[in-house]
Length: 139
Image 1 (cartoon, rainbow, N blue to C red):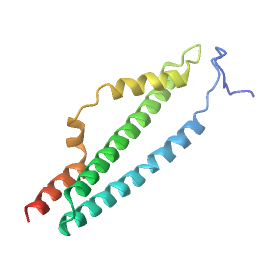
Image 2 (image 1 turned 90 degrees about the vertical axis):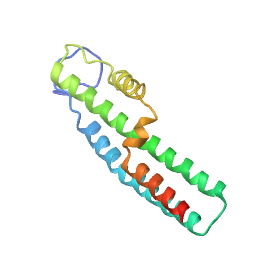
Image 3 (image 1 turned 120 degrees about the horizontal axis):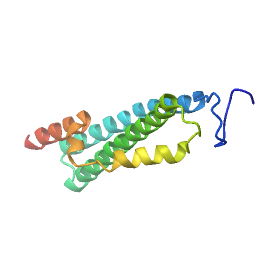
Image 4 (image 1 turned 180 degrees about the vertical axis):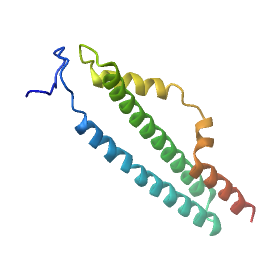
């Protein structure tokens, strides 16, 4: 199709990223699902503490919250990697279109390699969860 390139043919023609950008928008909307999951885990954990249910149940809520934080971080890294790859191609306008999947994977892995436990302290919902849980356990 004129004006579009969907292969690695080396063409310098126009590349439309509208499909990718639409998919990214959907992924960003998934963020609210992760937030809802974190809210639900917090609510259940607090109820368990208030009703003095076994600590092992509360501990599994802590694990669930950690999983949500990890999922949130990975989603953010993936979105950032895709946006970075798109911007790279748009700005550089290389003669040969790079393998976008490989470019995204490389950028994603680079972001993932910087992961640390300190990331959990940057997640507002996780920090709030831990603080509220500690306060409830004192009571």
